[in-house]
Image (tube, rainbow, N blue to C red):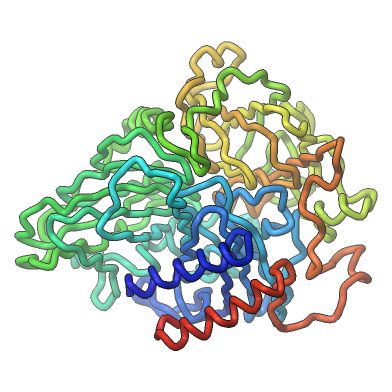
Length: 585
């Protein structure tokens, strides 16, 4: 298989050489319901091409990715590419403010370039709590040969999805939130959609399938860990093994060993793990909930098995210890210890640290405060700065493109307003090539994760208490890690800095699905005032909805590769034929 993969990559490079452009890679996915038993009980999940979780999108920086998505669900669908910075192309972002949903039975072709980033990301369905049923998969962006990486080539590459899981369907969870109920405690924690290994018969019933990771003694593997869950922070650890952190969401980190790592909702990490134990038995891989009380914690943590080829028997003994739950400083200090490797190469042949973010003058400051669930116009909702976002029927991006009035206003407040909370489609007016400081103030009782599409931002500070102007004196202005999702602890704040150099309409949201569904999101409009064509033009296959529905053309259920040249199309046909003959596809 490795030999075939090498031939495949070589063929893609030949396409680039002949056509004089960056390579194209093509996928055709069908998103549909499947039956699976994550916790031993058969239930409906969302799969891609019959797989749950979905396939890993394995590409190289600068490649053009074309994915035709057929929606075989019974409701509208959008896929979003978590952490992929689509340059000047928010049309492909796959969230409600940028795209009309793909109706049931329709297909839509995403086309974007993975540029200026190398690392570990994931995709997922962005509408209506669908991620709670699956539909997610990994994204690996590899380095080009001219870009060195700050570690040796691992002997294997393993993607793991960890998440809290409910036996209730995503539609049932939606109904609960709409009626003012909380989601309650998840029913379990799963690895790659599989339930816990039966480490304790009193907690884990018989018959639950579990994840086994097969490894060879003495070899080193890269583990890409994604928390694709609903609302639970998880602590990840492997019995008797160290985790050498090397990358998070497209940024190389200072390499440090950890015995465990708190991974919050929507976050991704890469570790190198060396199989240096004597294999007297298998070893536990554990993901256990963090920052939850007894009533909101699942009965059992997620447990997978690390199996050496020369293992002498099954895993045994107690699970490796988690951090002390009452020590709220542990996770904060661990998060602060994750720093940017400023001497490592970035996606371009220059060090990550060549972008000296600490020397740039801030042009805009937003202090964004969240609050627990509250009544807004008679409905239980959540807010940011007193505003509960409501998605208009016409996506913001389309409304801006066609100058449709009344869909949104560029008036999102930069501070919490002392007024009754309200529904609104208020948008942040970002300054193109400005440098924005955002402080997230978490007034809720649970950890919240915040994500910004289209960008990697610098996490420069976090602490418990209320942020003040004096808090800037604690900022890390040299090697704060650049990433796309950051945690904000309960009763605490987190500060980020972001360079607004990517034109488009970009989603800023909580990754916690219940908070997101109930209104904790906002969009950032970034327009180049000197060149309104700075963003990629409106795609030919745009789906129209809302007040622009009259523009919708008849749906064509086929792939459209409109951006590839005729030569590239011809080469693609030849390549597919060769791959078919070679048995690769």
